[in-house]
Image (cartoon, rainbow, N blue to C red; front, side, top):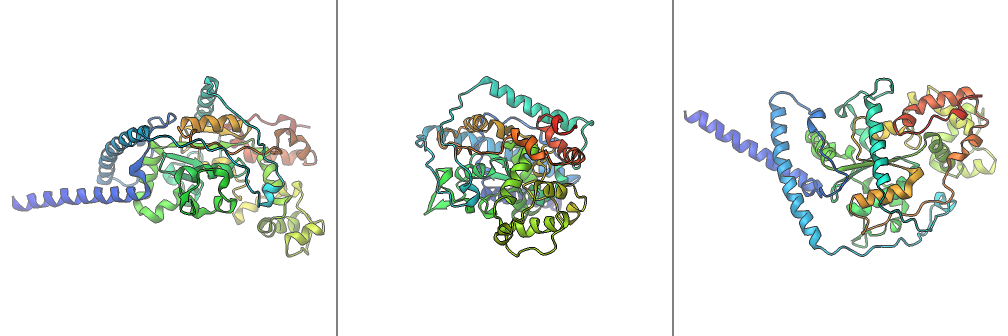
Length: 419
């Protein structure tokens, strides 16, 4: 009888030690400091997300779920109560930034005030966007690659666009060319992940652009494996269950035009060497090209929009490497059929959506979303940009980005897809 009792004792002690180790891990990344106060958060069924392991391991992880849910919920209540007692910081009015980046120099900021008031129509609009997304993810009539895979099937390197703020319980999936620079600035302010002379940034526009896009600045899901090993997926799932998840999208064709304008109409050394040179050789029959982008522009050698479309449609393009993030489809960046987003914003309603989201996160008294650009690429430009693109190419391009049009409620551009 002694040996079985000792065995059970060691088993209990070992389980307690394992739970303690997990709590220490979580505390390091801030998971044990959830602020579960956002009005957007809603209960999700964790069991619907596949859990690694079989048999006894499933029992272990479910026990950990129950224990940590209790711990985190009680901790959140204490945090929220203490936050109510703390005086809110003064509202910071964005000051005009020093635009030291060429891409921002050629754009004008809109410094007019956009005061979006609470509007029940906005809440209904959000519900409709999320419902549309869920319905088409469940609808077999819409098929696209990766649609039916589970969250566990997504490779870690494909989770690099999910930025985590543990201080406020927020996850943001950034989509390039959809105001992601300023949303990353907002995430830096909220998470206090970057210091300026020893103090966290308080105004998003004070953060230099080179720091905004530095991957070391942000905690993203793809970094979890290096920190937490086999626990990483389980941690991700709990965060996805507890945190408020949001993304911003844009008309897919307009996003492509915007990407082309910023990466190929402006002098960009990296994009010239990596993308423009191969495009000019393959689709414009140039065999001898300058070594630098400035020399190429001086010689009048630029990628045309038609060259860019050819590159996107060429089946050999993705055999060499996946699409660059600036023109990769949103469903491949943010996995909307595997992640149940709480808020779907659109660039076309950026000011109103940004104000609604910050208000829902209860951080609107701490910061404002930076003002938008005056000469943002507009949907009304589509016909002009696609005028010289053959009809067959336009139809193929739509099929390539059809899932983004349908999932996020953008109308099919019939005027571009027929003679």
